[in-house]
Length: 54
Image (cartoon, rainbow, N blue to C red; front, side):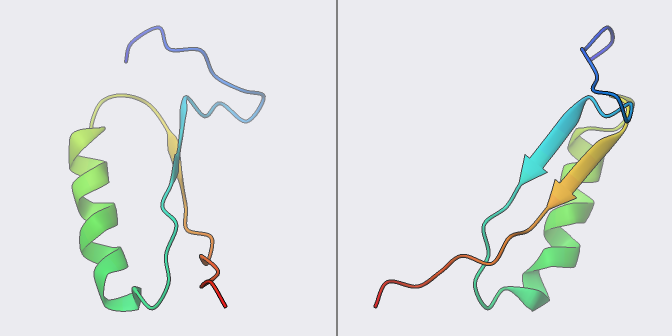
């Protein structure tokens, strides 16, 4: 991702992972994302809670 555009905070990528009852899976998922984006510059993992349909 060399040369990727960044925002004012210096982030090149924001990874959004909608979750619902996934606490046990977040650490392994973030580790995989870190490995995949290694050397690509700073990134921001975001895990908003997904609303379940009523």
